[in-house]
Amino acid sequence: MRRFVAPSVVALMLLALLTRVVILDARPMDHDEGVVAYLTYQLFKNGYYRYDPAFHGPFIYFATAALFKLFGDSEIITRLLVVAFSLIGIYVAIKMERWMGKGAWIFALILIFSPSILYYSRYFRNDMIVLPSFLVAIYTYLRWVESERERYVYLATLFFAIIMSSKENGYIYLATFLSFTFLYGIFSEGFTAYLRRKLLEWDLKKIRICIASAIIFTSIFVPLYSAGFADMDGVYRATIGGVEHWFSMHSQKDHWKPIYYYAKLLLRYEFFTLAIALAAIPQFWKRIRSASRLEYLAAYWSVTALIAYHILSHKVPWLLVHLVAPLAMFGSIYAGKLFDTWENRGFRLSLLIVFIAMLAVSLHINYINYNDAREDLIYIQVQPSAVELAERLRMDVQAGKRVLVYEEGNDYWPLPWYLRNISMAFSSKYYSGYDVVVTSERLAEKVEEKGYKMDGVYEIRPGYFMVYLTKTT
Image (cartoon, rainbow, N blue to C red; front, side, top):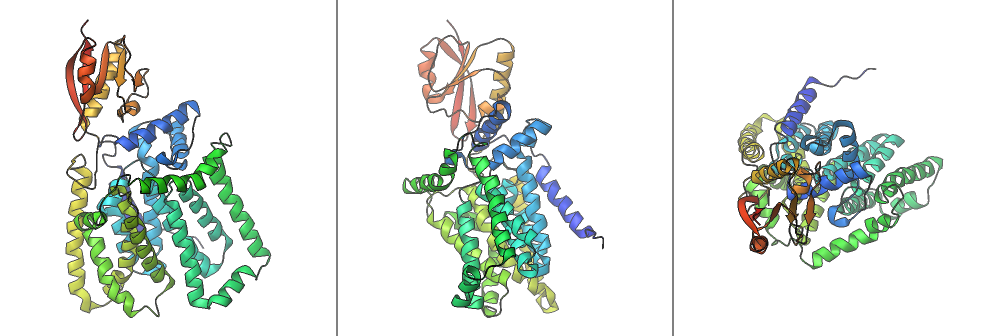
């Protein structure tokens, strides 16, 4: 029988696409975006890549380099992979209607309009590759439980390989998924029966699934981290080395924030999701002995995510999406159930009002206020004047001037990305013989002593300025 996609699904997906692509290149490439995009460009042009846990996994580099080859290396194309994965996550949320009922549509709407999820669905980072991939893994897991069709195991393995090849918090996702399946198996079958079935009862189908899944995972994970087997030590850095690196960052309190950091962001931006999640707790408690597998999974994911990301000292706004999604899934399950009775019309109205308030916040921060440093969700957004500086330097090089961007800490991003197509010098040391030198404010006087004069100041990030100096002698 031929299957058709419902018009409501098509309409919602078109709406989701619109939210992701409208003025996608209006916001300047951020500091981190500029670094990752430039490294991707180097992979595209020179074929060079070496995994460094500080810059996260290789999937985004290789996939985006392929997009560069097909469509060119613009800002829109750079962010296109993340856009595509965010749409995958929304589609999967809709497909969960078979278990969530109307709650799946609430969940999908949150994934579309959540201020943090929408913002980082338009941002060249790995987080909105990891999160949608995990939603696919959840969907395929539940379909496997229903049908035991092997294709769902292989699809889950594929997306877990993408997760583990994208970012180191993939280990949190993997641990959450494996521990849940283990604990739920014990809860539903009993400890002895579950272990006996898993460890002692084998047949050809089970053996085939294990072997095929191992081949799928390693055929993605190993070539990516080893850069096509040119750097086999990359596999070590991706496993033991990657975990060691982030434990080290945790002990050093890299990007440290207080314990209430995410609570503040949730209250300010994600109040709708937080509200329905809190409202769902008593509903879940009433059903705790008869809850479905997905209800348990959503609750477990919410709790483990809240614990993990609050424990880690490394707290940054883009990690908020990994808290919003499980809370949204958990809350949407029960919000959807309350739509089924007319007596809850007051709840529906309240839900609509709070959702509209969240929608207003989301639209404002994503399409109007996206460069405002006062927004905690935005963090240290690169300012438009950085793009103006890059364009001025481009014109200088095209006019035959010799240009040096000099900063002792190499803190000149995202300028290398914006100037990727021209030949000019970026350095942590000062060299003579240049017509134009651009440096940070703190080094400007040192350069002026070399016979230069100031001819412009540009704000790169909020509170961080670079000075344009021209040769006088």
